[in-house]
Amino acid sequence: MNRTLPFSPAPGNQQGNDPRAKRLLFWFVTVPVLVLVILCGGWPSGCSREDPAQRVYVALSPLAVVLPRDKILAAAEYYASLRPNALVMRGDDVGMMPLYLPGTLLVVEPIPYATLKEGMTAVFRRADGLRVAHYLVRLQADGWTTRGLNVQKPDVDPMTAANYLGVIVMAFAPAGTPRAG
Image (tube, rainbow, N blue to C red; front, top):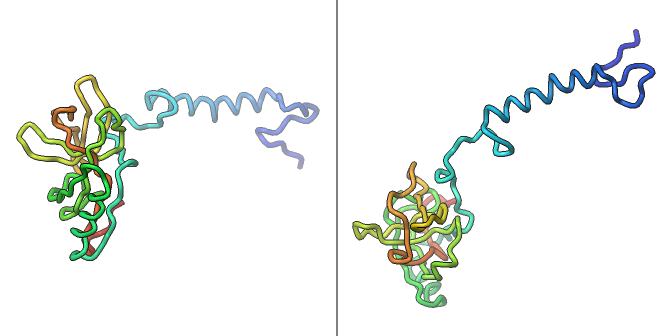
């Protein structure tokens, strides 16, 4: 029995422009793709209806180097001494987990505000005076939108040049804590 496949040309029609194959292609490929595009709200973003402020951008944030607990302070201070105006801070909150765990020493350098980019983890002072390390989501007219990795929504107040302290250029985590990443 000689059967033809739905997408193969009909006998005698070897150019590949069989109307049956075109109809099948349209109904079983093109229409489902168009339905997905319409339902998902656009092309090619996929089915993510996520607010861009909720996306995770930490590509420019350094991973923590894991060292023995008694060596991390010396390593952080030495690295900070190699960078102009850098200082060492200790991360004590869970807002940037799993990238930076509580107890991680952060080397913070005040690079020019105008050179900041999405994905950097910046340290800034909130309105209540608390220093926070959160990643930069996007630049708005009133400053940078920031967010902690462990926080569902962006920070209420933007980071501006006035409350900006620097970006994390290196991090040292004590051994025994899971490696960030």
